[in-house]
Amino acid sequence: MILAGQYNEMKVLRTVEFGVYLDDGNEGILLPKRFVPDGLVEGDTINVFVYHDSEDRLIATTQQPLGIVGDFVKLKAVSVTPLGAFLDWGLMKDLFVPKSQQITGMRPLGEYLVKIYRDEQTGRTAATERIEQFLNNDVLTVAEGDEVDMVVMRRTDIGYLMIINKQHTGVLHLNEVYRTIGVGDHFKGFVKKIYPDNRIDVVAGKKGYTRVEDETTKVLRLLKENDGYLPYNDKSDPEAIYLFFGMSKKTFKMTTGNLYKNRKISFEKTGIKLVED
Image 1 (cartoon, rainbow, N blue to C red):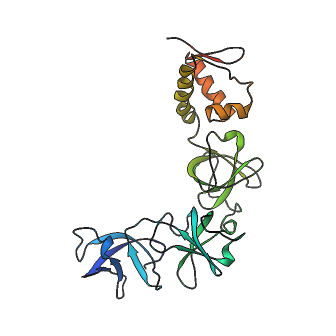
Image 2 (tube, one colour; image 1 turned 30 degrees about the horizontal axis):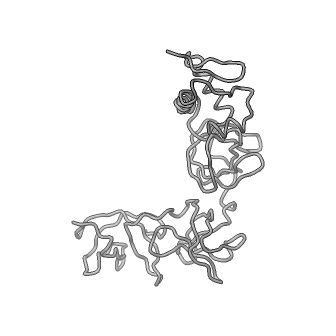
Image 3 (cartoon, rainbow, N blue to C red; image 1 turned 45 degrees about the horizontal axis):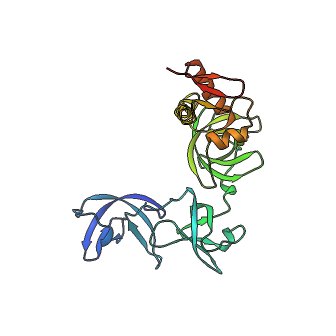
């Protein structure tokens, strides 16, 4: 069954002057000529994205949208009407957000975190800002230590609320943030802790010391650029460390501890010093 809003592997049914028709079990779905790869002939198969065009017909494209059904993505509004807003998702036809699926009202050029979904009644692809209805931690599909895909949902007083594997929510605490992030950013991380009430704490990056190894080069470079000495240590303010190194205080301590064990730096009263070879 061919579904709108996702990729489909389809066979070329017939060639016409304005493109090729792909086999959907009926009369076929058009792949316009501009998107037909050179050498594609009847009987070949091709992976295409299927969606409804401006006349509400299913159409295929080899363009890659910024998201498919089920994805949480940050998109820019290109126009707004009394019925809803249209978002740029990288295709010729913009993605519709019904007025009822907006939270505060969208404005042209504004960027919004939405979930792409398929309307059950019409089969059309649309988007909604009301994303929390799709997320719950009642039954978890992750365990402590699992690698997960994360999307930044919003900032809170203690950190960032994250979407985990498109299913759950978790918190990335501020002291675990080691680079600049914003709503809609996608990156990998792992589950640090699961509480009895199924609240989840997550950490960005790789598990364990692999992340520290990634930061080691940065600390050594900064030391060399500052005559072998930096006025930061485990007593420094976390915000000062983050602003200078772009990493959390915890990561800084793990990184410098690793460098000290490998005799690359020494700890001084007011900072760290590069050990000469």
